[in-house]
Length: 269
Image (tube, rainbow, N blue to C red; front, side):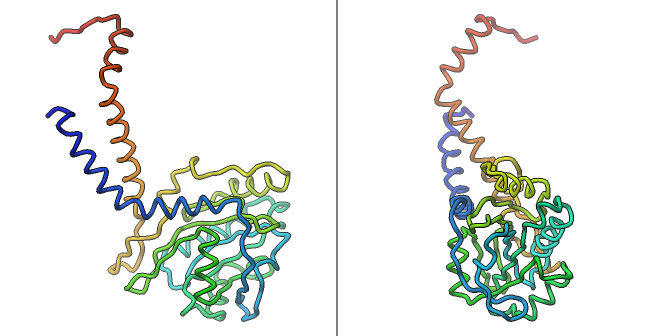
């Protein structure tokens, strides 16, 4: 079958997969668009049950992540990865950082529960705050930060897997996606800011955006499975776009190939 006959089918296929991917792409775009903004100063409640303002952390580089304590997989990996950052980053950088972990399950994660959860990853809350807030504030804060999450009917949450570095003035400097954050990259982002250099956007340098979204909950094993559909859709769209370009400019490409090869033809055996 000629490509001309297949072309409408491919266009329709792109339309269908685009419908599936558009929500994920939109969330990722909102996340990236938040970079450079200043985080709003909302009031939180820490693991001791005390009110703390987000801006009370001004002057530090804040390692901000969102989790919920009943999350069976990704949240544990994310929180452990944050703990690893303190152990593996240069002490001169780590001493200027403070981790802030906020629960997205306002209804169930009490301060006491967050404290119990936090003690699994740190023996001191001097450099790490686990916090909660009311649902309305959580929604406002997450929107301002470009963070996406949704509670499913089964009771679990679909959410972005993301670490955000806030500067000392609470400006969003960098997002790191996935569940295992590279200490060297996080350290580099903080050091660049400390030394007055522009912080590099890491999204295009890594395939970790395949792990942006936590989804595909498996009720049998009680764990999440990494959903690569988002990445597959992007690759498929790129391939179809390339095929479309080739089809549109096929005559020019054939002419260019003919000129390059000097008009030589090959014969079969």
